[in-house]
Amino acid sequence: MTGDIEGRRNAERRGFGRRGFGRRGRGAAAAMARPPARLVSDLASGIGTLRWFRSLGIMLALIAAALAFWPDFSTVSAAPTTNLTRSERDEYRSQMITPLALGADSGRRMGPSRLVVPLAAAPERPVVELTSTLGAGDSLMAMLRRAGVSEGDAERAAALIGGAMPENAIADGTAFDLRLGRRPSPEMPRPLERLDFRARFDLELGVARDGGPLALIRKPIRVDDTPLRIRGKVGAGLYRAARAAGAPARSVQQYLAALDEAIDLDRVVGADDEFDMIVAYRRAATGEVEVGDLLYAGLSGGGKAKAQLLRWGKEGRFFDANGTGELRSGMIAPVNGAISSRFGMRRHPILKYKRMHNGVDFRGRTGTPIYAVTDGRVIRAGRNGGHGNYVRIDHGGGLASGYSHMSRIAVSNGASVRRGQVIGYVGSTGLSTGPHLHYELYRGGRNIDPLSVKFVTRALLSGAELKQFRARLSQLRAVEPGAALRPLVPEAAREAEPVREIDRLSNAPD
Image (cartoon, rainbow, N blue to C red; front, side, top):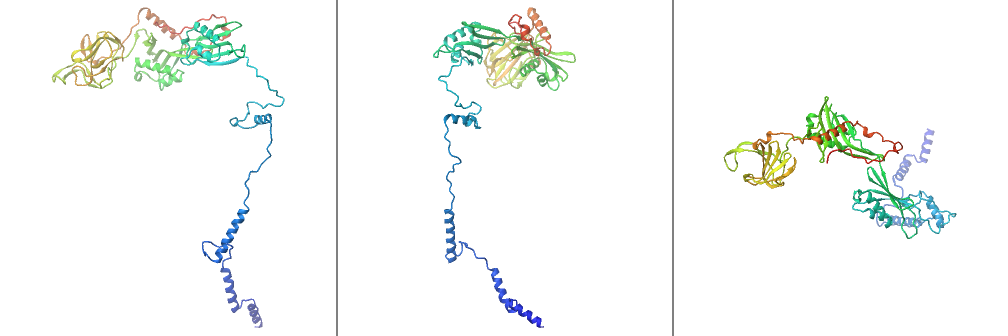
């Protein structure tokens, strides 16, 4: 009991007694709940109080202190400026790793050192070599003068070249290699020492001064004019197969156009057929190549020839290669328009009674071109009663065609016309209800149905021309595929050969 009383007293002294605990406990709790004192309070609350003015003053003092200790941003020199001489500065620039676009000299030259002694006067180049191009509408004399050739040398060179070939035969864009020598005196132009240019595919011309006056030099170029023969299977497509075999695009287009005139490409050509084309081809010893026109177009399948066409004559038409002459498909439509009335009995739209319609009417606007259905000779061109403006063409073999109601006639009586040539224009002259073409076809002078006739025109060869044609055909058929691509004879192996002009491989008569 004595221990309990002593413990209670000690507890009261420490403040944990009943009375002391409550009083001291409330003070400790209040101290813990009170927020800590702040140096600057919120200036948005308690405006005008002593605490607010005190916070404002502290804030202004801090701003002033920050401004007072603001750092200085003045320029700081990384290194003292070095005074360089001009030669030292050039040396630095020549060796710096600065792009040339920014003014550096790297890759061009080194700056001179103190050992370099400047010359009193730079010596003139002993020889100047340059290339000058002949422009469109330019003259050889004017081109040489622009290049710096003296007037006398330019006149002499132009006269020498003009004696070898006409000046208008030199193609625009031809490059001339010039070599000019040392000036006799500073105020005089440089003398012409040499001039070279490609005059033709098989010829180079030059003008040179070899210890004397200017003289002309001819340099014939060896040319192999063996035609290029290309053969292969049609496969999935004729154009693609020919191009894959190495045929030039222009030659393939000519080949397809020639075949299209002779056969129906969609029906006749098969995947297992073999195409055969021969193209004019020239190779110079200097490496240039010149591809010409298609000379021969052939197609075979199943061991039989389906088409054999040879280019012949001045106009370059393709003839059947068996020697029977030019082979072309039948007539073409006289106008690009739909048929509005066919051949036969009908009620006349103007006369209002039944009568024979002796032709075929084609729709067309006024001014639409009218074409000759095939080759022939105009035997009538002018007014013809109810036909209005009328043209009649004789095609030979008793066949003729007539074209009526034209607004304008484009051919004259007696003129020769070719298939597809414009002979007039659609109109409504004569006995007509509106613009259209009335087309008639005659056999032995009598009207026949124009839509019932399909014929082939042939320009037969005979006599000496037929012999030349067959000789030409044999010459081409003897060409081996790829022979034109074989290497030319080396220059050393033919030094003793006489120079000859290379004839084009074209024996067609003029």
